Amino acid sequence: MPKMYRAGIDLGGTNIKAGIIDDDQNILAQASVPTRVERDYTEIIRDMAGLVQKLMEELSITSDELAGVGIGSPGLVDAANGGIRYSNNFNWNDIPLVEEMHNYFQCDIRVSNDANCAALGEVKAGAARDCDNAILLTLGTGVGGGIIIDGKIFEGGHAGGAELGHTVMIADGEQCTCGRRGCVEAYVSASALIRDAKRAAGENAESLMNELCKGDLNNMNGKIPFDAAWEGDQVALAVVKNYQRYLGEAIANYVNIFRPDVVLISGGVCNQGDQLTEPLEEYLAALCFGGEKGFVPPVRCASLGNNAGLIGAANLIII
Amino acid sequence: MPKMYRAGIDLGGTNIKAGIIDDDQNILAQASVPTRVERDYTEIIRDMAGLVQKLMEELSITSDELAGVGIGSPGLVDAANGGIRYSNNFNWNDIPLVEEMHNYFQCDIRVSNDANCAALGEVKAGAARDCDNAILLTLGTGVGGGIIIDGKIFEGGHAGGAELGHTVMIADGEQCTCGRRGCVEAYVSASALIRDAKRAAGENAESLMNELCKGDLNNMNGKIPFDAAWEGDQVALAVVKNYQRYLGEAIANYVNIFRPDVVLISGGVCNQGDQLTEPLEEYLAALCFGGEKGFVPPVRCASLGNNAGLIGAANLIII
Image 1 (cartoon, each protein chain N blue to C red):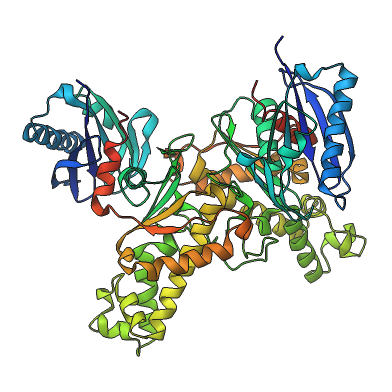
Image 2 (image 1 turned 120 degrees about the vertical axis):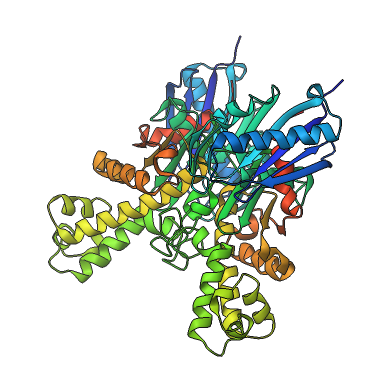
């Protein structure tokens, strides 16, 4: 009997999510538990395994029917050796994740960076499922990058590759969390958008953004500048246009290197839909090397939401 | 009898160079003719073919013994379809290069961008011959980029990829030849170094660079700022340090994406040897994502000089 089931685990700073998929990419069952990152890594990994075992029982899947377990992890992942070199949020250093998981499962176990897994999920079952080559940018607290070449995750030659968010777009510019200044993450993350919106609102008392924040800029979020801009607030519109321009410059850089079939973005800003992506496509047409002589890919919003990482992680296992 | 000979053609704006290599990467014979770019493309291609035919006669190689002809071309190359989409220097638009060459040769014929070929040459026979994954930056009038993954050229998913020089490192910065502002090429090409040295010398009459230019800044070249800096000229030293910092930032970007085994640079600045590469390695150690937790590659100068493109082009043919 062919092993047709795969487990995917999305290891997050808040929750561990796990799911089991079939060979048509359907999630048959999923569950989650709080991560509680302060615990010892062996306890976190025990919970990851326990979630998968629970789902297998629920679906009456035997270990013979499970092709493997894929894990999407934050941090600097050494996919080739199945380890996590470093994770700031988890305070992890050189954690032998795959080896530890083998205490619970004898099947194939693989790990990759969470943004890589989200990209793979979207290519296998989401907004890029017609594509072999794709770039995904996850625009959240930070900026993750996933690169899919010929249907597979591109990890780079050694651990620490595919960090698209940590390429500088304005050398010596805004401080980035990685220690460097001017990274893409410092301009196009949700945190960067919120920082810029706070600055602009603070300097312009008349901006509608102040009202939407109920007079306290600590209430600023990534939606308010867009809401205010679409209401005609010029201060907010400048923030939004600036954000889109940064995003356009960053994506043009990746296109000039990878020329993917499609560029995907994910995160809360995707709620803006075409109002976000259409200007980005105009930037690409104007900025990409060779103009119309080169291939200029479309920009789409990711479609799997929170399930992208889980489905992508399961697809680390090739059946 | 195995076809063990391959021809490589390096198509340049000034000269067409061709050579024939054996399976140990030795150049058995080479020759060149002026390109005269103003001519019709069919005449240029006829000369390319004629050079190879002449070398084959010289070496008494029959068409049965020639495995193929590889061509390194400037411009936006469509390797998959064997065409040149666009070349500014040649005033070429959609030239069916491989098809036209098939009028002269029935063997395998392939084309790639000249910087890609130089990178492949260095991996097969030069400074990266112990490596499967490498990045090459050619620092000349412009900045070419070559990316080798698992021993093969990475072209990108569609035509126009691997343009490492056309990624912005300072959005809205210096004007680039590609129309965009702030590209890596606008900061680390020999032209950019000369521009910055001219500016600094023009603003600082006491700088030794003015004397080395014999009082006419039109005599500035890429060697003078280094010569003056090593003589203790503080103005020149600032130009050199700034140039190295830009190069360090650019290379750190590529490392954060590709994590290659090695980064190579080529061009006249390589005459500076360790004085150029050692500070670059210090920048990488400081700037690469994850610091020592990730793999930080060495930076080396390319070693094949003008033959890199020819050897790399021949290696487009797999034997």
